[in-house]
Image (cartoon, rainbow, N blue to C red):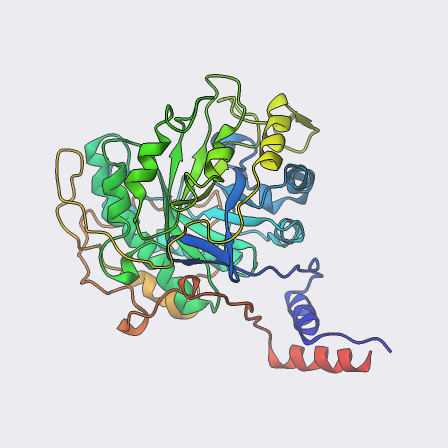
Length: 442
């Protein structure tokens, strides 16, 4: 006599309700944050992955919406032995179930950039770009990817704050987006999904940026901090300056990882992995993402794809074997590897010549976006919508501290509370009952 589990029945019910047969889902334990490290269950988790954007930023292509693109690349990912990919462009109007489930079956988690060129914070004019239309797109991206266990995290911004001091004025808006995304996840989903910022490695404001995203009330702070680093050029831990960066971030209080790392000034031997997985760094850093998988105009890639549609043959460049070798040579350490069990905040940075922010207050959540917290975001505008960068007012009101707490009670994001194994599946009562009865009859 054949039997079917309740989980399988629920998954089947979801597929029936959606009107399509979905690929079989592979259950992965979500990644959580505790102290200054990531965990899967009770096991420390290190990010050992690649940045993945076939066609580069100019193509603005969603590789996770097309199985013809992602499927051959996932085979390469398995060959490399990675456990995380970062995807910069995703279309929140499309289905991603095939690619996300293939990635889950390979044991690969995904970090998603929630912004795209049409829906993002404008570093030059941040106030008009922070508005309800923008948040609808951000929240629609969360709605689409929250359903997959292997969605590890979202970036609320990427290198919005840069080397010009005036770009730091955009920091309160990006931090408000971080607050809003965490509030939306806490309100709408009973599962951990981390939210943080991917910073540029700008010496003049790197530490101020890190402190800013970890200061203030809990509901305003990030779940992690990441930055892009290109200073290791076939050098070593000291020559690259990584020893100083470890010292600077010691006792930061949140997980830190490299959202991009690499250098092509010399032959790439990926010695960075050896440092990231050593006791020189593991008490502070939780790994990183190598920039990048596909060979684009900037020449960082390790795989070349031979057509514009990104569906052609995948050619492994010499750096592919070098990266694969380094991944095998430098495995993730076992145990806590010096991680701190305590999360804590940082003092907010003071205004100075390199940090032009003189208040700790954040912009108010847009009135027009409040309905999304109760009703959901609805269908996303995708990558070719009308855009939102000039949809808001030139000036915004500021919120009082604690405005992002669910019910005003300071409830924490589930991502910071430890293991949560189950993601709720929402199906109608009639479909659920019919499916369960059918399952019992099998």
